Length: 506
Image 1 (spheres, rainbow, N blue to C red):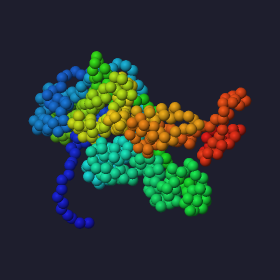
Image 2 (cartoon, rainbow, N blue to C red):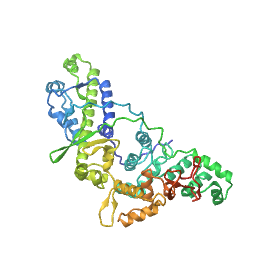
Image 3 (cartoon, one colour):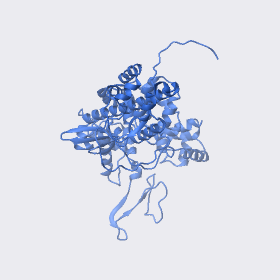
Image 4 (cartoon, helix red, strand yellow):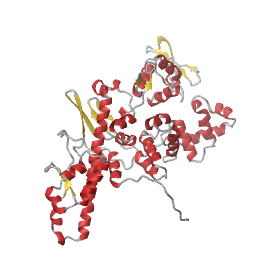
């Protein structure tokens, strides 16, 4: 142990801002649960069914469209001139503004998951001692993981969104890949398996070597062929494959998934005449105000103990912070969605085929907030649109360049890949290289490995597993053409009278 003096600059977040950030990343169901909990723990808060009084000027400064810094300044000024009597005479309701009421039936609520993958990883990230800028990168990476814990974006794509050097993003990604569950943050299955071996201390094992050197050949080569390639015995290859089977292809599967539950959109986009109106779906969020029973308590003047006044004052501050955070959440989400509607207007008018490439950085600049704020808004939240209920993340996708200077969205490219595979001859299916060449001829600039990644995301098997060989269309026993069975090595056998062996295609 030693005593030393250090000089440095460090950004610290005010409690109000921390609460605002937490509220912003909550889906509407979790927000409702949080407010219900606050109602049960803060005696100064009570729920009302309708707005009965107008908001005072002080409340408008706190609950209005002000920025967090302006709201904090207004709150500090109000506290310095705080007067209990005048405050209660002017009114004591803290009621969020309501944009629209919908009398339709409210869907049944489902129980929430105890801990999500996002929360689990964010908690580990916050325990690491890294600079604030790297902390934001980590939050952005975690926010872009899918339900399996895999990252479907390249480092270059993330760096382009954040406008940072790829080396810095890769450094934080390497840190996220050390988190629990093992294999999380990998960009593909191969990398996830190698990470799991590394966390087991088996990075130099034969099983890890099989994955690193012969990953693309595992489904084509026999154990004997692998043993010859690796220069080891067949028994060791058998043992390595057993070790490989112990690992999980989906790091987060089974730990953070919950049963199916109804999707409750946080935002609603309605078309009114020729305009699209965005409003917050807060019909189930409780309306709050100061409990009237505390008016008489504080009007007693000297008869009220100092400890009681201090307690009530602290609870009042908590109520102010809470309502300010709710209003900031509502205002930010509406502004972000309005910017998305403006950029993706053709989607709302014509459908998913007209979705344009859009990155979070574009919306962040348009709204005037940080990219991390856009990520919090988009994470695990949905919006009801004339084109159906969509996840907010659906509107963000990097474009794929074309030779004519235009660009296509990832969903459009995936649809084209699926269409190519659907139209192929089952006897001679297209390989990923042939699909890549067709896309190049159509002017779609796409890397060969990206074609494989998109095909896997579509849950379409490789060409060798899509192959079906038919003889001449002569009927067999009066039913259809004769069928052959093809092994992974291309060996053709007679029509089977028993189940096809594992690894063979019928």
